[in-house]
Length: 105
Image 1 (cartoon, rainbow, N blue to C red):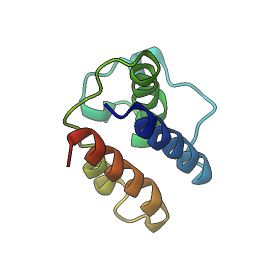
Image 2: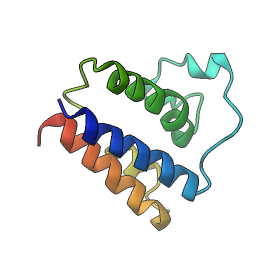
Image 3: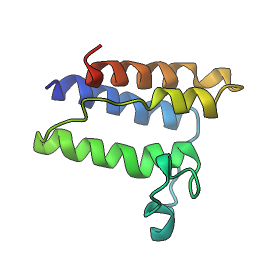
Image 4: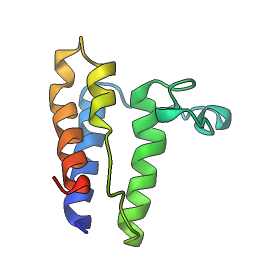
């Protein structure tokens, strides 16, 4: 498993969220974070799901060298959510690369 490459992609995702001013200093409520809907779409904007759910979980897996997901598809949701926002192109590209890395494509 490529923990080092995964960690680099996670850092780039964080960087891009900050660059795009999508990074939040305010943590969502515990109720929002407990959402069981895909991407917590019923409770959080996608960028908050990335910041407060996806990144911490993935960083934990990398740090502990636990098994990484073998089939992941985060980029399609990013394409859907940010279809009309060309500035997100680089962020979506990194998500595509991470999907491909972990899915073995």
